[in-house]
Length: 78
Image 1 (tube, rainbow, N blue to C red):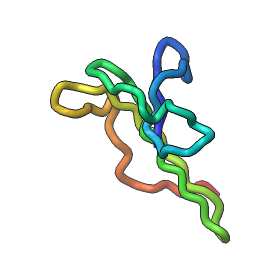
Image 2 (cartoon, rainbow, N blue to C red; image 1 turned 30 degrees about the horizontal axis):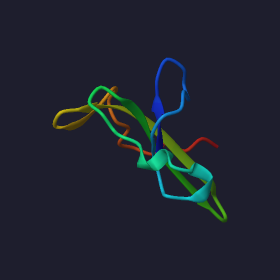
Image 3 (cartoon, helix red, strand yellow; image 1 turned 30 degrees about the vertical axis):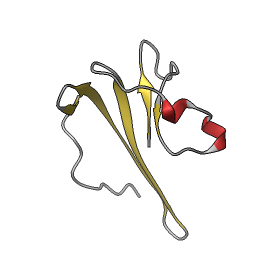
């Protein structure tokens, strides 16, 4: 689903993801105002390959704000 972003791209901390063994306790971390996360869509299909999208957000007192304009269309590269 997404990971925390800090001074480096993947500097640890909380992830926004499932409680799978490979993630340990990182999905149980605290999400605080000012934290920056990625939101990552990744869908694989049998016959057509993969669709990936990453949007970055900052946590606010009211929820979150996108750090750029969210992508609303799918672009196909052949």
